[in-house]
Amino acid sequence: METSVASVAVSIVIAVVSWWVWRTLKWVWFKPKMLESYLRRQEARSKTIKLTDDITPRVVPYPFHMLKTHGMFPG
Image (tube, rainbow, N blue to C red; front, top):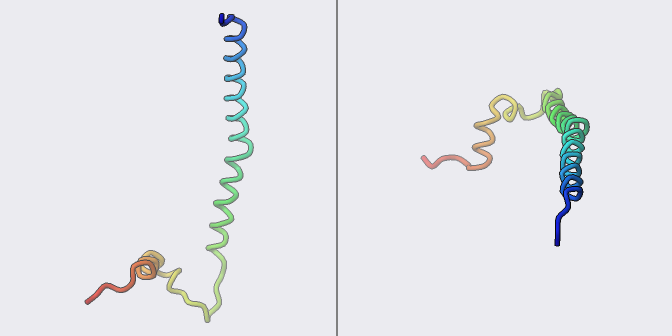
């Protein structure tokens, strides 16, 4: 079975066009959607809290998460 120059050229053109379409789609659609998702999560964290709410997760988030995950150290 012989491979013609035309079929190789068509394959290369299809690969290049597919690559270009993917990069354009990523730039136009996926990157803005990821940024939108990040900004929405950030906005959710900046909401105000009531005086009766627990402020520990906001004041010391990392130690609070560590204690919640691993518990108190024996001592």
